[in-house]
Length: 479
Ligand code: ZN
Ligand code: MN
Image (cartoon, rainbow, N blue to C red):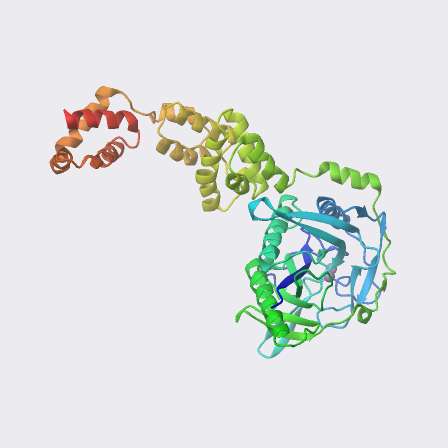
């Protein structure tokens, strides 16, 4: 039995987060906006108008090209017209780039489990405009031009993925990177990150690339993984049954979770590409590239490794803390302010700060809790000044207060009670009120000590020092 392997390449379309479109001043906002409200003669291709290039699009595309380690960024790259007829393409052509794209020859090291990684080639990266949207409703086709002229970067990878799971992992990393670089919101549901996958199979050990199919219109990472997996399995069944793989374009049906054939694939010649006569080439000087490189932030994967190396925190922590840039900045600033145990800071950030962030649906930087304040709270818990329960409550209070954590503790009397006489009084009171539990404890159920400590904490509003409370309870119960 021959063993098959899957060969997958991706074509991603990334919507850059500029305010206005690529060749006109219309807003790029198209999510749940009334149809055909963000349009003008330029983006709808009326006669006699001329496009003019939005400089921000080039800047953001350049950031992505350098983050993807593109070896060759063209000093002059050209726009081209990709001609095809479709109702949501009012000009009859899409302004794209073709033979002279912005950048070629990039790479991305995709981390895989057990410290392995997969080298993904970025074949090319080019700038283009989006087309409109066709909506099918009550046996009618409705056309919305709001998306026409929304700026995109098309990024093509080599056929370097070997499983549906690797594809999903890459898309998660790409989304993380785009948000980290603040060049795209990369929300797949909103069409800001789209992905077509080219899938073929071959016998393990072969070098050649067999006929591939192209999967289109998948709108979530989970669906991309499912679609690619089901196509790999289909091709294997087909070949095992003696059939042949044809170069189909396949459409993913979200509702039913199946692929169906859209059409036989066009070849590039069908698009009759030619240079766009209405736009000048994009000039990218080596100094502009150098400036972009020097302004790149530390990228998420680099920061992840640095976190585990420099702070000695587990990889699991480093992964979560670098999922999002603002959180990783917050963690690092807190460690610096705390000056002590990074793992302890990590626990607080991952458990408590992250919970607040999710509840508030915000970013670490906008939480209203400063790294210095968190460091101060952790310090007070470590010093035994406050219980960890009070510490957690303080996180909330600090956010809505001008007072420092220490001031709140002082003024609101939140300091931990470890004073023996005060605790003894409360303990005696609790024993008196619970004769059954006392009898059970004395009869051998010493595990009840936890329950008694719990009562102490409740009675003191969380302020009893649990260790001192336990000692006092034990001495009373055993005395
Ligand atoms: Zn417009
Ligand atoms: Mn494209």
